[in-house]
Length: 130
Image (cartoon, rainbow, N blue to C red; front, top):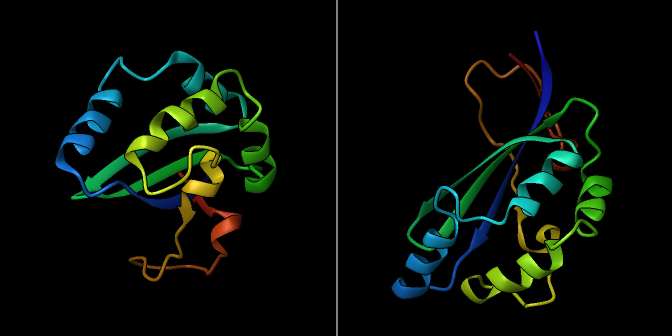
């Protein structure tokens, strides 16, 4: 068994079909900058998925079991090319060019889970086991 934490976040894209298509292209397989994924792994992010409905994004982020969200996000902001990436993708997002990933992506509160065992605060992450 492996323990990990799960975080769910949301972000709004500009409601412009051309910008949305461009954002999808930037995130297509092989198109993200390698430094971005490497930086995420270095701060303890094990896996991340982003889903889209119209101009709303939903992220599932699985991390190491002892992940400290605020500390890791602050560290991530200092990783190579991270600031450049955030400025680059900001044109597609409802945000400012200077915003960090943590400022853009808002933590979501879990309101329901099948067979829910316990409550948790969004910034603490949901303890999971596989």
